[in-house]
Image (cartoon, rainbow, N blue to C red; front, side):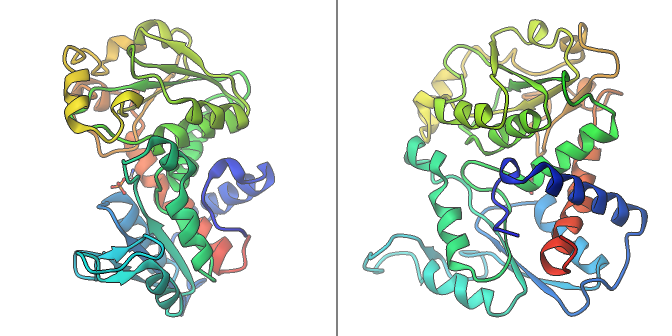
Length: 331
Ligand code: CP
């Protein structure tokens, strides 16, 4: 299997096989299938779900993990090519990744957007460079412009709740947040829904439309995104509402600019009334972590439509399937 960087790059048959394996490991969670195998987690950014679910998953499959957090217990990494390292960074990624790869059977890397250039981040250069440096099976644990493990878990969650594939209506909606978050999860969620055959709607206030580079990814995955400004209208007939905060393209990487732009948008906090016209059994989704009562009201995320905890649990099952495919010859 190639480096796992984007769900949308998988063939439908590969997704089906991973989902079938996920069902198998959920039914029989503990085995020795990966006994003696080690999976490395190179975490350049914080995590609860990703780090814990990969560690738990490897343990349940009889293997183990090595977790490295550059700058927090390990050397601060340099990414620039040809730079003179006379500043804060202590080890170059061109040394760190091959060294770590020599200790493990597969490597996962979390490397969020740098936030300096929108165009550059949408190209995802850091995760691609790290994948090239790694001679072992490689998994993106969230990059500047995708979160493929979350996307696979979200696909399975939609299947769990019998959300229709072809003809199903998926609404990705912007939520208020104090920080200008990058586009990794919005792209992962919208391309996942498109690849699954769903109609994709993106709902956001003026100035917060997804950038063209993100919309191109959704089109390439098979859907022409429709744009709405009113969440209640956007959710008419919807089968899934996926909330996520993201930056205004005009304030990308600019916290002060973001603070100005989100003033007056506090009403973009999802609540149960948004789903009033949704299809029967419509689900509410969020990848977590979430800013409760800023991005999503307690009454929605704790209500019967919410499948957020199942999304998080599915991270464990689908990643175990991925590990079996990558390290255990089950692909
Ligand atoms: N959804 C997700 O990736 O969560 P973490 O950032 O906690 O890993």
